[in-house]
Amino acid sequence: MIAVLAAACLLAGFLLSGSESRASHGGRPHVVFLTTDDQTVADMLALPLTATHLGANGATFDNAYVSFPLCCPSRATYLTGQYAHNHEVLGNVPPDGGYPKLRDAQTLPVWLQAAGYRTVHIGKMPNGFGSDPTYVPPGWREPNGEFYGYLPDPPSAYFGFKLNQNGTPVQYQSTDYQTDVYADLATKAIDEHLTDPTTRSKPLYLEVQFFAPHDPAEPAPRHAGAFAAQPLPRDASFNEKNVKDKPRWLRQVRKMGGGLRSKIQDRYRKRLESLLAVDEAINRIVNMLASKGILNETYIIFTSDNGYMQGQHRLHQGKFVAYDPSSKVPLLVRGPGVPTGVTSSELVSNVDIVKTVLDISGASPQITVDGRSLLPFAVDPERRSRRPILFETGPPVALADAVSASAAGGRKRRKSKRVKNLDLDKTAQLSGRVIKPPKYRGLRTDRYLLIKYADGGRELYDMKEDPLQTDSVYGDLRYRKIRTWMLKRIKKFTRCQGDKCNRSLAKPPKPLPERKGRGRGN
Ligand SMILES: [Ca+2]
Ligand SMILES: [Ca+2]
Image (cartoon, rainbow, N blue to C red; front, side, top):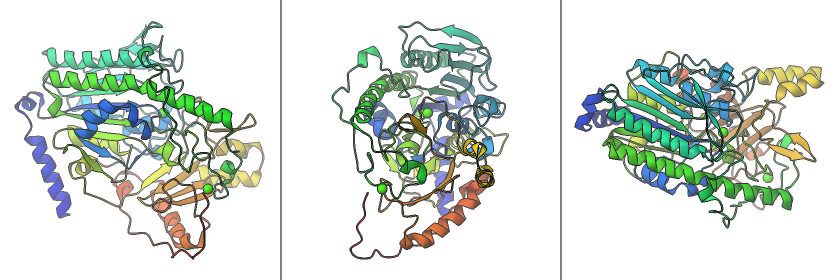
């Protein structure tokens, strides 16, 4: 408790002792929230300027995850600060998910405007947004908001795209590159905010949600070929040799041949190339903040909505699954009071972002927010808790549904177990037949990951022994106590709300000693 208070005082001290111009916007820092789409942690190699501006000049969270690794549910979490079982956006498309499921009157920008912030959104919105191309969601409306929301008309367009600009659909030219347009809009918004006498007294919340490196990952023409010689990183999980430890749905996926491997390689290079313009955009945004003299009173948060599978565990594309390449994301935070160049290995998630912005801004949510502020962990990188992260991909009744439907058998069962995902990413394919993972729930501690699939499949990984998740120990007697312990704990978090989602766990039991001569195949 003393440590908690000390960190809180330290933080309050930093917030209060800012530069003199802070008084002009009510003592509250500006916030810039930057996201990429489907970017992995390893893809940071294409973002050196971002790593310098935010990582070397702030805190890097190297143990950050998203609880539902899919665009729309993850973005709904960025707007509500809630786990998917509470915001109820449980997929990219209806009936489980999509924008219409989001209760957009109760979201972060609404609370920020109520607290006196001016809010600006640029870029991607949760999937399914734009059926009315003139609709501006609450929280981004004038006079205290500005809105430049991507319209999926046509979908996934890096060039010749359309934005809903404060209620007016605007068609961009086939030569306009989306990321560059976002950089223009973002720097202009910062410039105008500080120039206009009616706005410069207010704190600014600016979010830019980049589409790169999402499929089709088209680079800016000036970056085409920049990574043509970059080899795809391959570790022991790539094209996993032995999948006997894996659940049934994954055991059906065959090893990838040369065709798929070169497809992954080509896409990997394009993805990295598409990120170079994002790096330039972030560089321009940071430089604009500096030139306006507000960089040191601005918190900048950078992350991705989910990761991406690139051949690990035989999955040649997509996300959704709980394995690290899909669920782990980059997370960088810089701002007043955050030491420079520090790394926090605290286990954190996308559920924590909104609570962090509320902590910074002093805004009040009108709903129960599930996460926990990142700031105490950024300010004190040695600080640790034992709070786990819940992974979830379906309605809380999904497991029960699947069990009863499975007794009934037939088509209904197959339908109810899988999340519809029209995000151009069939997770795995076998002879033209799409194999999709069943819905699942999971619990991750800093050492273990337990996954319960709706069809009865189970996995347990000991990341201390097996960081690449190539050897599930769910059936291993050495881990029986841990399995039981994790199964009990996951139940406590399945329907958690608010602070109950942030309870720390006791130390888990230890695995029994390994018997001599037992080799581990990967
Ligand atoms: Ca995504
Ligand atoms: Ca294996």
